[in-house]
Length: 174
Image 1 (cartoon, rainbow, N blue to C red):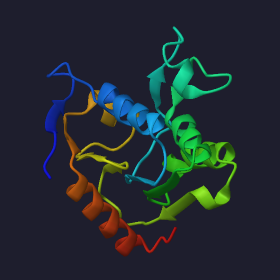
Image 2: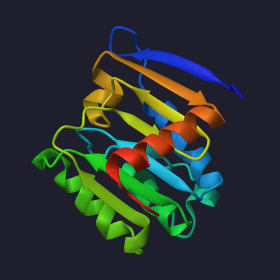
Image 3: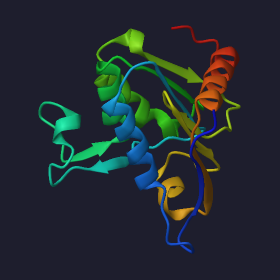
């Protein structure tokens, strides 16, 4: 079954950023957690993905919700809610802070799988029913400054195939 598909070209010339697309996708996952979530990107920064300074997302973010939520915070919340988090990134110093914060935030080691692949170039975030992919690394520049093309798709067959491909490629069993 084919669902929603939207491609956005971001960057300073277009006055478009990918932050809101990313935060919306992650909020949808928090609203219905479980299954597997894959984040694949050669470079990952612990970017702020959700502004909760007005408390608009308190009910989704749980007890003692932060006013600003970073990528590692959201992924840790998902792990606590039962989602298995799979991170595939390069063994690069740039990714170290994100990985350390994520490991510190995830209390169940069985819910977090970090794969360091020196050749990874794909850029994808894939939840239970959606996939976000394109040219964008999950960094400050990727989300806002760089000229990027990002596709958000809700399609059960595409998502299922992506999950199968990721498990096959990186050998993670849950």
